[in-house]
Image (cartoon, rainbow, N blue to C red):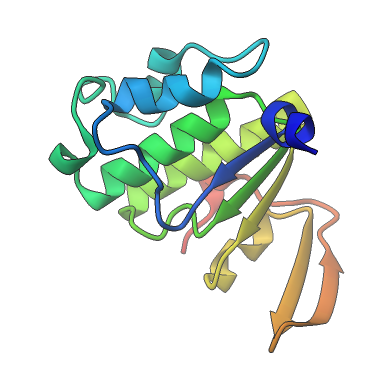
Length: 155
C-alpha cells in the first residue's frame, strides 16, 4: 500500500501540509524525489505561477501561494490518481482557473484520474462525472458527455 501511495497517488490537501523550514522548491522536491519520472520541481512551480517564489519559505508566502506549492508538489509526482480537497479554495479567480487547467490537462493529456472534492457546484460542468453527496451519502451520480473546457468556465 505504501508503494502504491508513493508511486501512483498525489494529494492536494485543503490544509497545505508544507514543511515550514523548507523552501517552496524543497517542498516540491520532497514528492518528486520519491518517484520515477517526476516533473522538475521548478517546472511544476512555474506552471502554478510561482517561478519568482521558489526560494521562499511557507511563512513568506500567502495562503494562495502555499496552496499552489501544495498543488505543484502533488502534480510533480505525475500521479495516476490525484485527490484534491478544495484545490482552489484559497485562490483568486484567475489563479483558480489556471490551477483547474493544470488538473484538467493531467486528466486529458496524461490520463490521470483527478478527483476534486469541493463545495463549489459551479465546477461541475468541467467534470466527466459528478457525484453529489449529502450527510455522507451519495445523492446522485451524473455523467457529463462533453465536459466543459476550463477556459470557457465562468464561476
